[in-house]
Image 1 (cartoon, rainbow, N blue to C red):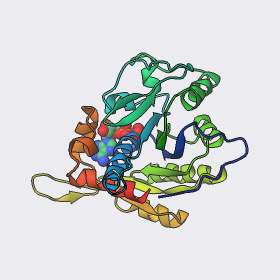
Image 2 (image 1 turned 180 degrees about the vertical axis):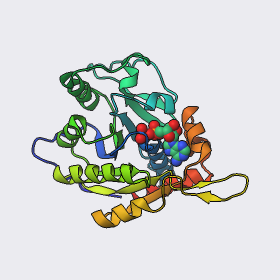
Image 3 (image 1 turned 90 degrees about the horizontal axis):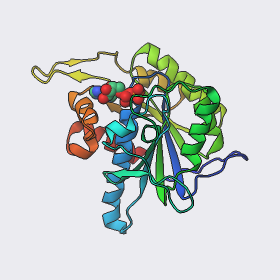
Length: 269
Ligand code: ADP
């Protein structure tokens, strides 16, 4: 689990944070936030199993850097304004044992983000530097989709242990995932692997399996990029329902096959 951070000179670690894992995607709507949230919960769960042995539980944080469409407040059932600590830093909000910070805590839920580039950058800087995380073993960062300013700025400003890239098996999503992987390589962020989401749908009635977005696309892309596929998450009603109700599947149905898919990924990261 120990990945050495390869820091560039201008990168400054986030105080108190040992490892940063970013969850990225080329395209929007492929399940990046769902993966980030469940991965954070799975890292906490895996580590609490370990903690029975070594008596040391791990602290996990979740930073929603998707400033245009923050999903963490809804998925983690959190709202409200963060309190300020004595040194004027924002305190993350806590649920299910995960410390969370999101632009969604700072702006009205219905307010569209119509910011200029500079404002977006200053918002990201606030989320990176003005949060009192305490001591974290892992900070999971839910990135915005794509390969723009925000992704570059996050990648260049903090040392990142690794990036995971989420894609559906669909060609158009894979093409964008490819670009995402290449961007991280350019800025020397190690890509830990791909996660294939919404890979297969099994009819709950007749058990027939349908590959709605195609089959094995991520596997082929992983071969091209010489990367691992860290996991395969099925398209499943309970994943969507659990996220929408603010009780992600790893928290609410930890024994389900869907939750286990995330737990296996967390064990690989
Ligand atoms: P992104 O962050 O890539 O925009 P989201 O995580 O917000 O995508 O997911 C988009 C929608 O798809 C959400 O409604 C989410 O609940 C749903 N979703 C994501 N992954 C799955 C899955 N494996 N099975 C069912 N629904 C999913």
